[in-house]
Amino acid sequence: MLLAGSLLGSIFYRRRSAHRKERVELYAGDGTMASLAEGTADAERMLALARDVLALPG
Amino acid sequence: MDAVQALADLTEISSQVEQVAIVDQDGSLLATTARDPVRAERFVSGITRLLDEADRLAKSRSLSELTQLEVSTLGGSVFVVRRGGRIVAATTRADPTVGLVFYDLKHCLGSIGEVPGAEAPSKPAADGKKQGDTGARRDAPVRSARRKADSSA
Image (tube, rainbow over all chains, first blue to last red):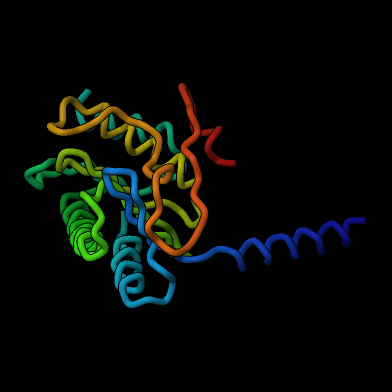
């Protein structure tokens, strides 16, 4: 029972991790939103800048 | 309420935010979680670069004035909310509850005195029309009094 639970938990965790994606979303004042497609140059540039910020010590 | 108090309230309410900075219209730092001025300056500088690039991208996509952005990496996320030139920027752990973070940041910004051109805190712009190409959106939950323990789910 314990083994089955652990196995199911592991599968759930891996699936959840696999679904986690990097994304960039821009919101405008009029309610519109643009989501930059993963892998595009624009998205990668934004992600790189965000990683720089995240890497800074607090 | 002053910015320091608003920041204290934000960090008390939201367990998801890690580093936070509130920057005024003229670029001056109003409040931050950074431990010293050098770290604070680096953080604001990084956020400014991110926001400048986001503004450029928004303009190239014919979006009207950029008011908020979210950049989610596998290692964490960066959020920025801007109103009337004043901004609040925050980092979070990976996979945050996006609607809640935006709600908390907007509430924080809205609680700091008057900002010209600012509107009252409302649901995220995610409810509006979408011009992008991926992903479903989340609505901001309505909360009157949330505490740290509630946001850890």
